[in-house]
Structure formats: C-alpha cells, structure tokens
Image (cartoon, rainbow, N blue to C red):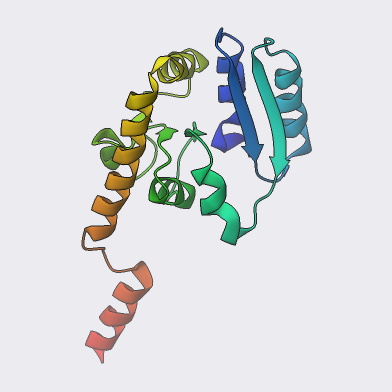
Length: 172
C-alpha cells in the first residue's frame, strides 16, 4: 500500500553508501505501486540488497520481526499501528513518521520518529542507524522492549464500542 511508504524507503536507499539489507513483507495490493517499487529496487546501488518476502501469517509476525535490526515504516498515518506494537514487543526498534499514535512512546526510547516522509530525511535516519556501533544498537533494542512494556503497563482507554454500550445502558 502506498500510504505505508515503501517507495519512500526505496528512494532513500538510493543514496546510501553502506551495506544494507531490506526485506519487504506484505501483499502486493496495488499492481501499479508494486511495479513502481520493483523499478526503484532495480535502480538501487550495489551495497543495498532487497528481497520481497510476501505475507507473514499473523502468528509468525512477532518471531519474524524479532530477527531484524529495525522496522522501517514511513507511513502516511495509522489509527493504531499493530505492527509497531508487535515490533516493540520483541525489542525491534521502529522508525516511523509522527503520523501514528506511537510518536511519544518512540521518542522516549524504542525507535526513531523521522520528521516527514521525504526520502532525504529517511536516508539521514538510516545512515545514522547503520553507523551505530553494536553496543548502541543493542541498547536501542533494550529501549524498544522497555517502551513496549511501559506502554502495555499504562491504563488503556476503553474501546469505542464499550463506551457506546455503556452510554446506551445508562439511558435505559
């Protein structure tokens, strides 16, 4: 899906000099967008390897994310962002835009909030991450897990349907 921003990451990677491996998960919902992304992949520099992995079974999402250094998600917006929660739950740092409800949590540790969806901004964030020494990356993973536990421990607002049901019962 275009609003998830895969093209943003691929355009950013065009300017990278470091060795980077990107695995892409998800269905090809829009053939024209998928073709654009494949065209962008074909134009990437040699140190970048990209592989389209297809969909992941829901029960395998967390174990899949746990194997990676980071989740890159330059989304145009999320109502919740389940994959962000899943990623943090397995201590996988998240890079995303401020267009999610996770901004404050990620800014407190566990990820990077990239200011916009411009490829230049994403290139700068990816370059900084790739240059981090191993102990700093390990610390970022710990912070991702801590961010998830902190979020999980917060009292959750009732679901909209629970609120509506309670309001309806009070009227009776």
